[in-house]
Each structure stands twice: as structure tokens, then as C-alpha cells.
Length: 68
Image (cartoon, rainbow, N blue to C red; front, side, top):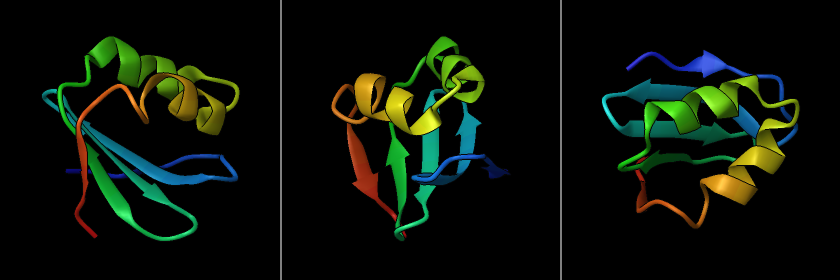
């Protein structure tokens, strides 16, 4: 999976394949979110504040696990 660096004070990089979203954080940790539609990934990448979008629409909406 290719991680794309993003401009955010919270998120460092984002990756997406199939319906799996990977997010690495500046504070440390790489998380994998399952069942994320492509439209949600695209909205995240186009959001003016990726951190706010993540906390509002992804963090508690999809199953996740820490992988790094």
C-alpha cells in the first residue's frame, strides 16, 4: 500500500486500497480502518481539515486496529 503524506497537524500520511484505509499519525502509530467506502476516502483527502474530517466521520465509524 502506498502512503500519501498529507498536510495536517494530526495525520501524517494516508493510504487506501479496496475498502481499507491506513492512517499514520504524527503522534505515532499506524492504524488500519476496514470497510471504508472510496467516497469517504476521497472526502478525507479533499477536506480542508483532514484531522477534523477524520474525527467526525472515520474514527468511531469503522472497525480499526493498530498495526504499527
